[in-house]
Image (cartoon, rainbow, N blue to C red; front, top):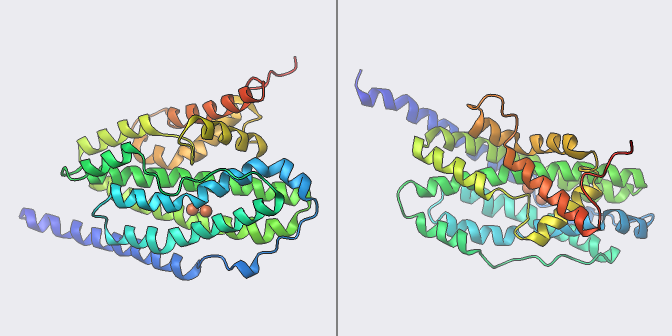
Length: 308
Ligand SMILES: [Fe+2]
Ligand SMILES: [Fe+2]
């Protein structure tokens, strides 16, 4: 059997995977158009209490959802020559959905009088521009793409976990209209994004060479940050989000479980060969830093000392 005979099934397999991914994106676009604004009911029972309990969550999520506008600029720089299926996903499906999430949440925070967090809509960081320039070196753009998928995996999983808690908290407060017409429809659209990154990352990982995998692992470990946090203030604000959503009040053991959920997909892809490592430690450390900074800002220590 010649070498070309060996490569044909592999190529065919790749084409089949490409079309599976393209079908997924088409389906997402058809089944999940941007949430119609007319279906949103902003009726509230106790707006003051809602703002007090969930204001920091709302402000944080709104900013992150609105910043997809900048994320697309970043992608255009980082991936000057993206596969068509990626471009179709982020420009035609993902961005319109996420932007609408941001608009709906923004209106809610406005109605509640919650102080908005200033979104960065157009300033691309130097390190991303550098990655874009390096993308001209053969093989480097694949690493950028891999990092993009990995960030997507952690971001979308974090979003689902946060919206789940937010939804439950709203139901507890008796804010059924907001839970059912704001948070539930948004939450419904996030798993499709996660599934996209999962398929795309698996497919690309299988194609990377040894040095590309090595570099991806190293860069990911050094650059991981909690969702939507690009500076110390935002890291602290994410700590407030975890606090309000009661994700960090059970101490290290509970936070580690949360880190496992955020990091599981990339663990399975990047680190599964290292036995005994249940979750990439950098995910846990980043979340812990957020929790510690948020507690410090309130004059507390994290984790709160247990009564003896
Ligand atoms: Fe979203
Ligand atoms: Fe999403």
